[in-house]
Length: 144
Ligand SMILES: [Ca+2]
Image 1 (cartoon, rainbow, N blue to C red):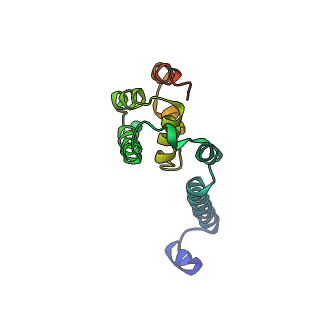
Image 2: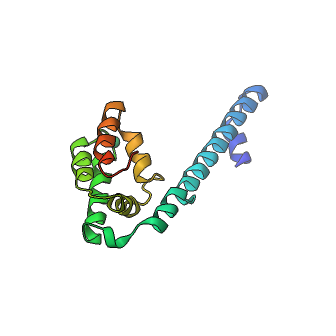
Image 3: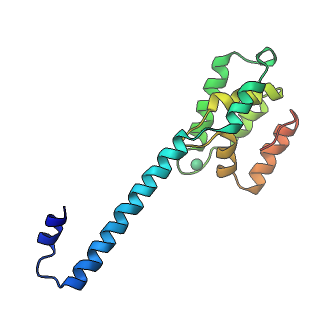
């Protein structure tokens, strides 16, 4: 690669060669660090998720397991990409009837693109929207 670089920069003076070489080296280092951070975000253990798994009482669940899986996917679709479908978020959260419903939805959501459900909601919603979500969740003693 160094040989290739020398060939490509033949005819340019040594100082410029050094600057260009340093620039590309830093660029490659930055890229490697960025990739490592992304990988770490995907694999790092999520304490909140682990604690919730221990705490949820399945006997209190208001819906079959498939409901939570389906709602978790719907929430992800509502939030990912540009913009946010707030009405789907409000509607889904309104259907939760107790803290175990919320916990089970949180677990079903798991981690998507390195974030759990609460992190996603905090990331996607503005102040007023967060307040609305908290007003809904307050009825079942939860908050984001
Ligand atoms: Ca979004």
